[in-house]
Image (cartoon, rainbow, N blue to C red; front, side, top):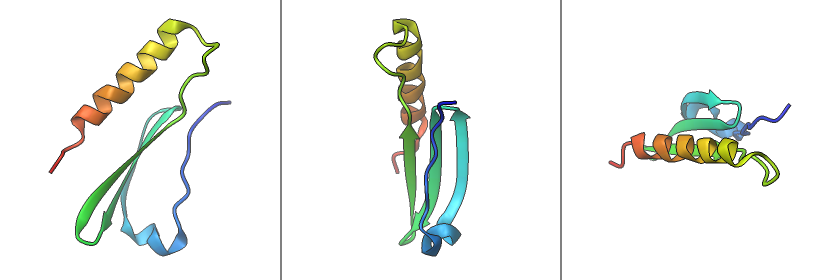
Length: 72
């Protein structure tokens, strides 16, 4: 099964605010570091051999999620 994950160093675990899995291929990790919020978006993109529609839908989802992350 294809999916994405992320490791967090043990010393940073208490900094994690949330982990949001948007699909098996997209995960957002939110952490507070030095009084600022850090959003980490990690993805596992479909391989080039996958149907074009699947790849296009994937990237549309990623770009939508990025546009929803507050910039301030």
